[in-house]
Image 1 (tube, rainbow, N blue to C red):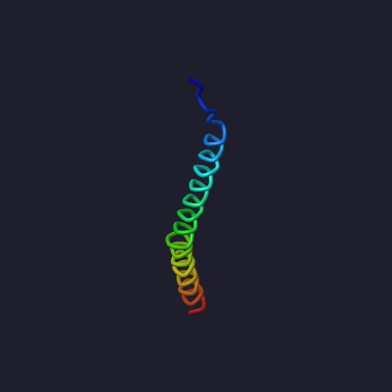
Image 2: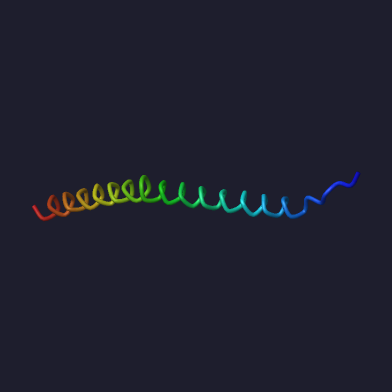
Length: 61
C-alpha cells in the first residue's frame, strides 16, 4: 500500500493561508486607519487650531 505525496496540497494550503492572512490583515489595517485614526487626528488638529485662534485673539485684545 503506497501513500500519495502531499507536498502539492501543503504548498497550496500555505499559499491560501498567507493570501487570506494578508488580505484580512490589510483590510483590517485600512479600516482602522481610515475609520479611527484619520478622524481622530483630524479632530485633534481642529481642536488645537481652535485653541491657537483663541490664544491669538486673546493676545491681540
